[in-house]
Length: 316
Image (tube, rainbow, N blue to C red; front, side, top):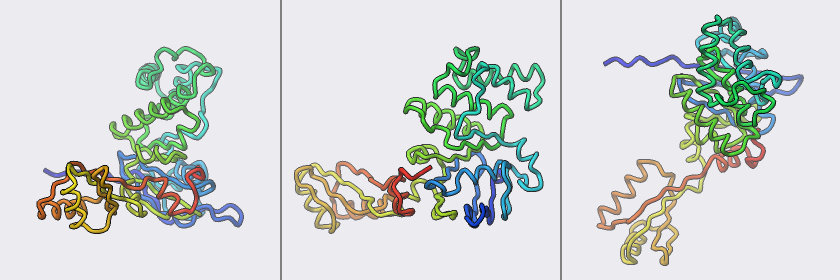
């Protein structure tokens, strides 16, 4: 059977942007596969929002080759705009209109006919759980409802690529998780999501790949798991059912933190599959059996601090 691979949703080579004498983006290369979530992280002023504005044609780049949904951002901006949706940091919702009217307005801007406009509006209201509030003014909506409506408006044109610039800023944990669920559903349906966020947990939960931007340059890129293995602090925790097994494992495996009360042995490790296989093979070969095994890896907070020298509160 022949498997047809979709072309990348976004490709960026040598992206540069400066304001005055300040180089905001200094030679950025990116590749975002179709139907995935790609998250761009970085401290305040790192260039995340500038990157989104360039990729969505809102501002021009000083240099670089950029293609979004197969179209050149510089020479085919209209085709790019027709293929994307954009939700910024602040909801672009008209408070004087109802949720239904806001969606209908977007449908009109996308030149949808009357029948399609009504059908698409009704479908998005249902998908984003806004049925009860659809005919109420947006000014009465909670923060989570406004954000859901804002994302729904960005999807009216069925975009291939959806840019979400800090979509959950200011939301309570329940509303934030509701937006996460919607993002997962969109990607499952084939949409590509380009996400910037100030919440490292959000990138960890949602992103297939994460890029870390600092000082206008990419300092790391990979899956969340790959990035966590870049910094020290990971370990494997083994628990045994009796002191004899613990003692045997400690003699066999050497350096580690042994807790005789809890019958545990903590060993340095990155949690990779190959290293785990090696560890378990050594135990099995010596006839030592662990009752439980758990893996503890650094989180993206640790990665961010290690690679940028800034605490996570600097992420914007």
